[in-house]
Length: 89
Image (tube, rainbow, N blue to C red; front, side, top):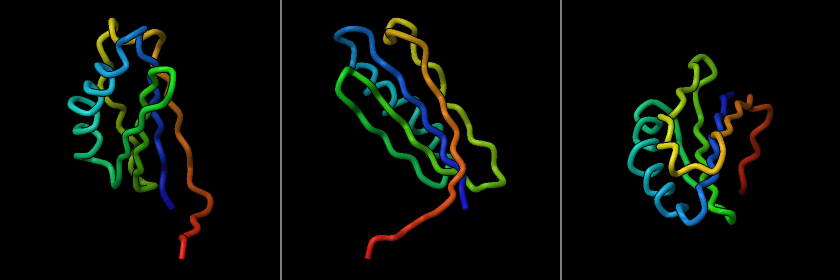
């Protein structure tokens, strides 16, 4: 199985596009260089989410911290252990 690490940031008012660009240019490459898979999401409320998948034996890396002026609150992080995978088909 694998481990998933979620990283979620809420942008300061009106800074969602900048936070998303920062995540794409700064955080995503750091994770993509080491993780098995990384996905970048945006959501209503100017939120940005990164989910990265790691081999069970590797400790997930945390992406760099965004500039404080882009954030409305501290970044949230969660780690998950995969229990079951069901493939569509």
